[in-house]
Length: 446
Ligand code: NDP
Image 1 (spheres, rainbow, N blue to C red):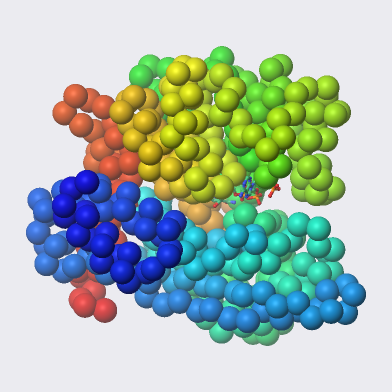
Image 2: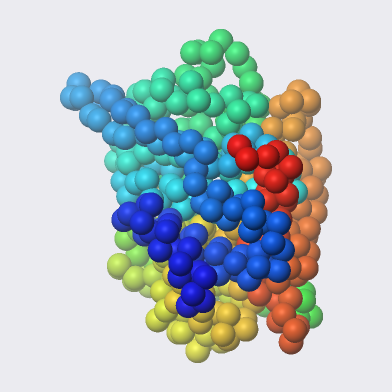
């Protein structure tokens, strides 16, 4: 490791003990940025890297609620307000039992650079709770969300901090959170994104992350005169991002052969077509069942406790969670002929896996670039809320496509190496950093 990175990381680890995912995210960025900062000393003198790795504010709070048996339950709520140099804090809320401070700090840190890449004026944040919505009734989810918002509302606002969905937070949860915010503040503002279409939401917002990651893949493939047509694609996850990535890849002529959840994955060699995808959407969004049921319904193979990367494919889209592709998975993907990885999830590849992809010089689009379509469309939802005027589906989709093209261009600008290889990791890290860093310098030491 570069000794400058090593020294910087020693400081980060000492200040943030035990926060492994946060260390991982910061290290990846430091590896791209430290050489760049050496060439641009104004960033070094202003200590921008040190400053962006320190959250502007962290809020941690108790979330008590009553379950259906009348028993008191206690969860912990968080909001990490990481950076507001280029706009109000913006980033999702995650509800999952694994949620802790380190995971949310990694997500908030990534969010700062991602939001900058979108070209829209949004700072970075992330939040959530260790509450597990799985197996809870609608009423329990509502009571949790109301309690969570009863504290969070003090720290957010349409010009201050605008949360959105993430793992475990979809339309249902945003609805309950928004209802409680409105009741407490007595104002109807665009304080959350991912809202229902009848009450301030944007068309294409549910689709945006999965569509965006597919548009990004299409841009990457185009640099090699290739496209998604005829490609075999392995997708992990079966939630929001995975569902719409499956839809868009299929629309572009690719064949998606896997879908997964935290219990295992299904392999459908004929491809998950529109009808089968409808089944997954109903299963996951309404019945809240397990992906295993797909295998039972369509008579395909189900792999309990396994991830899809053992299946031969041309392209992989990890759309479930962090660190879901390890070094062994990455090597197997390459061996099986995978030429493109577009990350719908945040930091789904371990550092060792990323190294495998970069050494093999495949098209590797890291999450902060490839999945930025979700937050970009949240930004478009904020614009529509401010104008009090909704855009059509076509208008939003066109803007999303333009944004994904621009993010790709930024990655090419900052990530192209002497031999012509595009290192999208460097491209996204440096491209996202420059705008935030310049804004921080302009705003003084704050
Ligand atoms: P959802 O909750 O809708 O879906 C998550 C999916 O991933 C589910 O299939 C879930 O399975 C699976 N999953 C979650 N945790 C694990 C785990 N520890 N191991 C294996 N599988 C797991 O979330 P989203 O689709 O919204 O988010 C997926 C990823 O995309 C996350 O990394 C998120 O941060 C990222 N992302 C999301 C954006 C958005 O707009 N929603 C924007 C940008 C990034 P199960 O049902 O069994 O839990």
